[in-house]
Each structure stands twice: as structure tokens, then as C-alpha cells.
Image 1 (cartoon, rainbow, N blue to C red):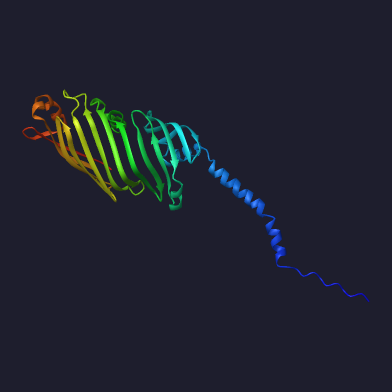
Image 2 (cartoon, rainbow, N blue to C red; image 1 turned 180 degrees about the vertical axis):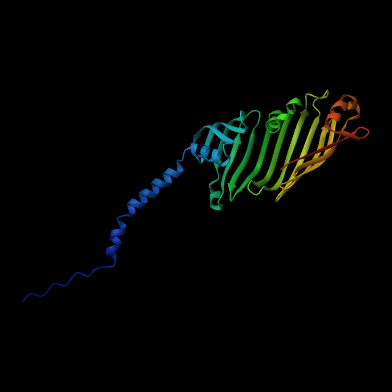
Length: 274
């Protein structure tokens, strides 16, 4: 009589061996996914920017990758048949900011008329500018915002700077401090040009912002303060006066700016909707 052979005991590792067969495939899929993400084309950034700004801002001929790319130009459309083309933009995505739920990029614009650098981020409904500096032609900027200023033909250059400024378009709220300088300001309606250099200090908190305007130098002295809120819109009040040596030549311009409240001092006042 032959003794029965002992049955082979099933080991706990047997089911695991089937799972391990999938490891190479899963690893390959993961590597492929990482490769796809790492090589996202710059056109993806262009589509995101266009959608994010509701077709107001777009990239012309983007190239490179989503993470580090460039474009021939940044085109800003503020009104039908009215666009602003800024040449040569490049960007580097700040990857670690993704952990905070923000898409951030260091941006450089090399346009000869409007160079700019900034870290721009978006997350949780908030757009944020950090370490931003920009130079803008006053004529193009003002006419793009207020076409009715065409008769004045403003000239000079704007210089904008902020360390940290954020705004939420949905809530109409902003936070931070910024500075705007108008250098060599001029207008075709003045017999004296340039009129001077001016500084606007802006401070925003929640749903309101305040602005203080001072004169750095020039024949036309302007001082004043303004405010903006989502409920009341924008307002500004101040005074303008001419340097004693230029008073006669600037008198006509001062009369266009406001009413004379005392000899040589003209009142400036503005208010508008949200």
C-alpha cells in the first residue's frame, strides 16, 4: 500500500504574485503620465489664459512647454477692433505653488515700449501680483481705457510697481499696496510740455481702495485723493495750480481741468460708476 503524498500547502504569497505582474504595467503608465504632464505644450497655457480672461488676453504663437514657454506677443483686447500688442513674453511656472492650490508663473515681457516683470498667480478665485514692475506708454494706456481722451492726446510714461497686490473679480475686492507714476506727463492742449512727474499711492483692503496723488516735480502742481468701492464706484477730488513762472501759459489748461476756487487754485473733481 502506497503512502499518500502530502498536499502542497498554499502560501500567502501566491495571490500576491498575481498582483506583482501588474507592477511593470502600472509603473509604465505612471511614467507615461508624468511624461505627458511634463511635456504639455505652451498652447495649453494659451488656451487657459484665453478662457480665464474671457478672450480679453491671448498669446500669439506660443512655443515651448506649459511649464516654461514663450510667445511672440501678448494681445490684450479691451474693446471691439481695439487691441494692444505687447511683443515677446516668456514664463516659468512656479511648480511648488501648485501644492497651495495656485497656478503661478514668473512672467517677463520684453516689449521695448512696455517692459514688465511679475509673478502672477491664480487660485481660490483670487488673482495675485507679486514683485511686479511695468512701464507703459501713457497715450496707449489711457486711450485704451478712456477713448474719449483722444482730444487731449496724453503723453509720457506710466511706471507701475507693487510688492503684493491681489484682487477677486467675483467679489469685487482687492488687497495690497501699489504705486503708479506718470513721468513726463503731457497733453496736446497745453502750451507747456512736459507738465511734470506725478505719483499715485494706492492702498486696497477688501471692497474699497484709496489713492493719494502728489506732484514729484513740474510746472503743473496737482494734489488730491481718491477712493473706489464696489458700491459707490470711483471718486477723486483735489487741486491743480501752476508754477508762478508758467501761470499765464497754463491758465487755459487749468480752466479745462476745473473751476477756480481761489486765485490760481483750481478744483479737480471726478466721480463715476463701479
